Image (tube, helix red, strand yellow):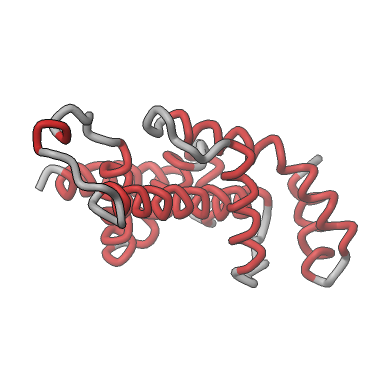
Length: 185
């Protein structure tokens, strides 16, 4: 399906056409599953959230937000990628809460030293750094989310954001340097 056809289905869905939503969901399911697998590949072993669960949670949050104002396929996929990142960050925070006590039985320091550092701490740190970047430079944060988390190329990002490809590259380079500085503090 072409982007204009996708955009037409989005418009029909916004207008209340339930069949348009069903068609959109079928069209983007494979891409959302690819995104979910990409995200979960980087998670710690034994992560309890699976691909289907992540996709379903992202759909629920996207629909509950009430903001069905996506302009095109790239914009929708980017919003879904951001939502998936938020789902995983919330999952990691819950895990950290449980790890830090959260009603669990306490163990000795010796037992605790046997536990490997978890990826969830990194995910929360990256999320918080991205939130700070978004406050400082929203376009750079968008480029990071769409490129790193959404798997988009510069050309697709530029098209979705309505900027030149060279600007997308500049935002990417700026964001990389900014995030590196923030994460090494």
